[in-house]
Image: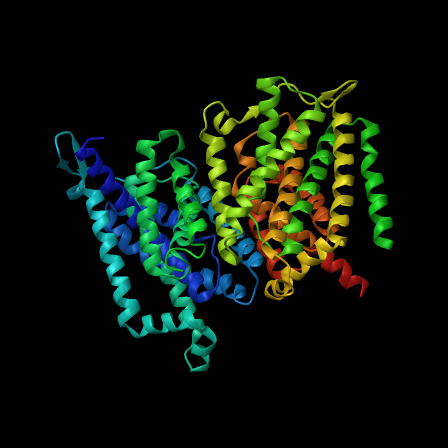
Length: 286
Length: 305
């Protein structure tokens, strides 16, 4: 492997990892604070990608699609929380798995009903469709650079929100002891709803950003959901920092696995997870 | 006591189609009984040991694929050889996946079992020589002397025997001290550990027994249908099976079996009625979770007072 090819794969891995982080951070926060394991989280990624496809065809711009789609997905998140997730707070894991599994089936059916089952592509926004030269032979699409930077900015913003704002303080308090938080007079139900909607929007935004890179297809949410689980297991449940580390590790293993061991690309990711389980069963930062 | 009589009557009723020779009912009820074995084995984990595993379809698939491989590549058709080999393979896979997954607890365990299931799904889907998403045909079904399991009544009778043996085995296991320890672990693992039980080992043994029985279901399925494909290995399959257990009533062996019979019926007729079958299943799952968390067995018990 030449140096420039190595650099290219490194960048791709980091970019993929950062996208995964957007999805996994919502998953880990929702579990850490609300105590609900949400299998439908991948569906939000899928719905985001389909909204990007549909809205950008309608308005002629991915940016408008994102500007319209994200508030729409916040509304979807609030609705799902109110109708389904809120009934799970006092229930066991089996109920959570099954109810959200039912939601996955419903969302899949909604997608096939509304958008059909064909693979769709979303055009890369014009100024970003150029390719940045990298060494002699390789180039890196500018849109990937943009995605990576956007994810980094979002990750930094998330950190600021969680560490520096009142909302973030409540989220942290909720993660360590939700009952105490509500005893102190904070409306925990509203906090939960807001956090769930934020996680939904993040997953959907990741899907919207990924749409021009990966194309849009049925079942795309499930692959991401499972990789997000791997990320959370590697990083440690409820830990944003862990999710960040885990996401980069999974992104890099996946990309390098595809280059080095083409037949067993997906196996590398799981081997990394198995290694973490053997060495640190509660995750790197759990 | 009343339950035992009912179960025996049900078992005898299920034996009847073997003599009728009606091809549709043999296949349909054969499938339903395989799902009974599959669901009851998962209930050992979910309902008794309190382990919500999404890896169960993986062991089903390993055994089914192995049967296809043994038949197609090595021309092994003797069930006295292939059945133990396939069950052993499923048990070994359960040992490895269980050992790794059980290092995690609670919600971690669920996510890890899901991840390993998907790993195997991708393996069966992508590995060269396994037929991709179309899967494999079992060219020669198991055959022993005059017994040819490609013959439907014979396969049906074999499945019936397997179901009865599985049920008796699981009731024995659960009534034994081993089963009592599992129930103890479900309600309070800490306490069981402080009583001196090596709880991780108990959970692992339960995982391996359940995995081997899932392998039995896979073996029978590949024998009855003559093909395997990756869709049978994926997490949707595991999810549907969990739903079967919950619908029937977890923690009772007969509950998940009733659930399996019922769902096979609903699935068969539902698919004929609508193409949006998955939406119905999705809504059904949600309704069961919200409205009857104790399942059909819970309703029956409630009715009995």
